[in-house]
Every structure is written in structure tokens, then in C-alpha cells.
Length: 65
Image 1 (cartoon, rainbow, N blue to C red):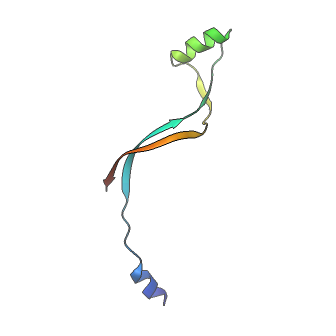
Image 2 (cartoon, rainbow, N blue to C red):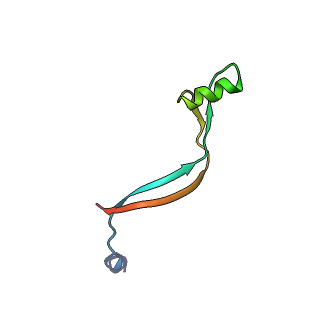
Image 3 (cartoon, one colour):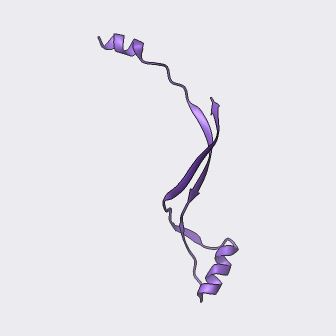
């Protein structure tokens, strides 16, 4: 009976997708003031403290392997 169930299972394929993901993240930087921290973060300084939650996902393309 298990062999019959395996034969009825549809074949699956792998698909790759390009997705646009918007995520809220918490970043940290050492600075002497909030204004300096904003300038440093705007310039790309600092590091991600927490990944945060995903707020939007949109599938751009899907391609068969």
C-alpha cells in the first residue's frame, strides 16, 4: 500500500524567486549625540543589532530550475 501511495505523489520541482522584502531593523552606532549618530548611520556606519520583523514581501520573478 505504501508503494501505491508513492506512485500517486505528484512530482515536485524547485523554483527560484527574486523577492522584494521590506524589513524594520534596529541598528546601533557609538556617537556623542543623537545628531552625530544620525549622520554616522546615514553614512553607512554602525551595525545591525536586531533583525526586526518583515513588513512587506513582494514576489518579483519566479524561474524554474
